[in-house]
Image (cartoon, rainbow, N blue to C red; front, side):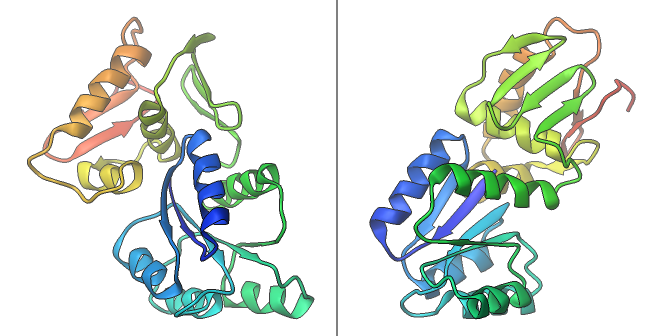
Length: 226
């Protein structure tokens, strides 16, 4: 899952970034409001962590402009201003949650998981597809009860496929959510990682969960039917 952190205090931003990367998220950062807004408008993210007090363009303005532009990405507001009025303004502008500073990383991570569940067809912290189970809290994967070891990138790819189970996902869409760069039609990076993932979750199983959609991309399904 790809997350954007817009926070002008670099120590705070880097603390969040490193923590989220340890939780196997893909993280982009911006240290001022205008840059953050432009990154948010020109890339695809699964959630945004947005500070209120920012140079150049404040968090409320960013949120307002994103929603007016039709960007529905979940937003978790971060602020040292914890008055009720500020929370009401942020929520009325379209924020999905509000976390006052200072905060523990554990609470931030839990709130992020919560807003991601709300925006996903899969509402549980345990994602299932057939006999494949992915625990998004412990970051452990199991097929038929047997634990599967995954690299950070393999985990990110599997989580995205499972959160979008039964949907056909283009290579471009997968790249935008699992990698930090836009899709290169000449690159076979998606196919390489899908092959690696298949070798771990589908290798010895009669039911193949990851389907190739010719000329488009991939789909995770619970049956082997086309």
